[in-house]
Image (cartoon, rainbow, N blue to C red):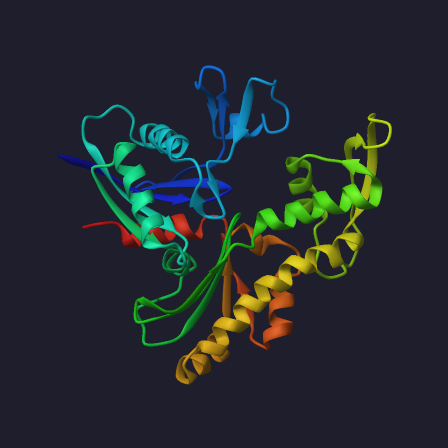
Length: 322
């Protein structure tokens, strides 16, 4: 017997869970903390994320997904089992699960996601392409005979897709996204200041002062790291202005993926996109100036979804199994 309908946005950075009739019930980091000696899971989600870079030698905090695909089958299964149990509580009925994957994953990777969901306790599994769910969640009527371009910038992948009549016409999934912005910040602070910072600190820099264009007011953030020469803790101030050139290196790769999809788009659909514009979703769309950058390089109006972090999970409700 099948029970609750659950929608899961299984992202590289976060897992969002939606229950039909209740809406989005929680968002948790895609992180699992494990004791490497006993193989026992110590924490999952927010609690595990707080352990990144802070654990003793016998405990490691792991992201079980890398660039949109499963890198640790066992940990992903246990993480999903935990989240499904958290969502439905104590019940003998197995839930029907709709789960998102990047549009560019292979059939083998799709089957891996499906298999891990069944092992985690799903009674029935439906795999949904992320751009489709993102477009629906952003309020786009995908069933119209009209070309719409959606760009979903997640943690591990960026999906670029032209959608018409309810399906993907042209799509591309690149392994360049939010985590890559964090990575270039880590490298910049190390080379420019001789300071080693953690990935959570890099993400905080991105979120608070990350910029692709000059802001009206220059922002500054002070962060702590380890001096690579003395080995001692040191504080350094980072400005939004110095972030511009290094973050543009990553952002322009996303722009190139958009341009490539536009080049392959049929003329009639391209004409629609010129009028309707480009919709961007995902956490990466919150980076200051990314809409302006895409618009300047494509010449097409760009809109950021109202709730870009939740669009995929929200869109899943319309793709729930009957």
